[in-house]
Image (cartoon, rainbow over all chains, first blue to last red; front, top):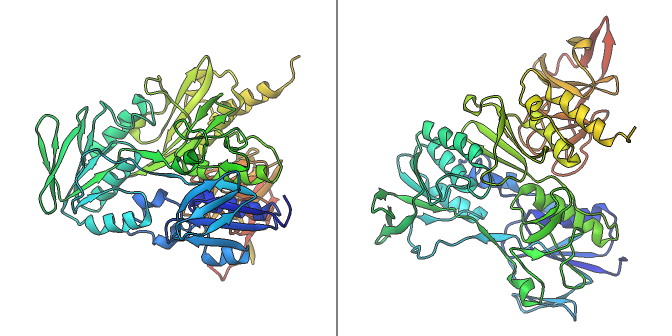
Length: 417
Length: 106
């Protein structure tokens, strides 16, 4: 790559912006064009279900960078434009204004979109939450005293439920699966989260689906599969996201629950790379292919791809990390768990502060912390090194976590005697 | 400017951090490689106390988004943090960690 080369990044959200920033930070002097279909400057999404939704943080606080940053770094922003097609052999992209943009390297940070609920009517009062505009519309609808029904008991749904409860709405959550967080966390983690919500006044309907959203001129309620009707002034559908793979697929890229990339971020198309939510990538630490819907992956995979397309060739290898804030709980997770995983606790999650661990073959594979961010972070090393760990010691509050981690990781890297 | 005792030196082992509130300031006081450091305790990205985070490889890492700051300079070490935290002068006297603070500013 030389200063005559140009990199086009499709998708101007967190991953796209971090990729552009990293290209400059690594000294790339060629042209960098960042294309996004939203009009807004690149922003981060976590606060859209929390601080911004509650009006406690301004929308501007979510921006990855202020506008001046892009000017200063000569990053060309082409906002409000969609990429319609990629011509991989000609190395150019067709934009929705009819222009073609040539590239030497193309980075796809197209992210994901909300999963639609089949049959859901397009009625006033029915919301989804993905963008700043979605957030602004939902914030206006969350009027104290109103009734909210959230369809979907995943992190987004639960964060919205917590925010709306704090705002003074009466809130019900409907989840088809028998427990919350079915895709994201083991049952043992979902249970304390469920108790937290019930204790805070959220009406939980688990193991039963929403059959119909009711209402004529605007939403009036949700009918469950057993005929129960939950009255509602506002309904939020939060049943997951779908990776935006179609653009690349149409150009011939391989896709299997996400755009298939290698450990460096290369798609199966020459000179086309991808990062963030949209990718299915091998994780060398977990020794399996993953698609991650997380802030960490959006930022760090994008930075890794920037470095790699400049020739650094370093595999992206991080322990997946995820956090959520609900009521007074900051919940953080390292690694990936299976729904049925047994969780051993250090502390009592009912007490509001605890760390849970899941193991496979004597190795730590997953750790979750309730209001224990700093201490939990120590467990990351244990997952990274894949060392054998003593579960009983980890769960003994009388033993310092720091000492256990130091001991185990020192042993793991020490040469055999 | 004046020196304030903030914590017993023996109370901190390597890569350990405590939060201290003194003269109206929130400080993160930590030890690394046998040396003591004091920094502003509030992350410059979003509100969080660095003393709830970890000290590792000469940096302190925020517990919320894992932004890292250099212990010596307070400089951010990469995304998402872009602004430095204040660093304070530190010395150990009579077994106590002392931090130099500007009297008037608080």
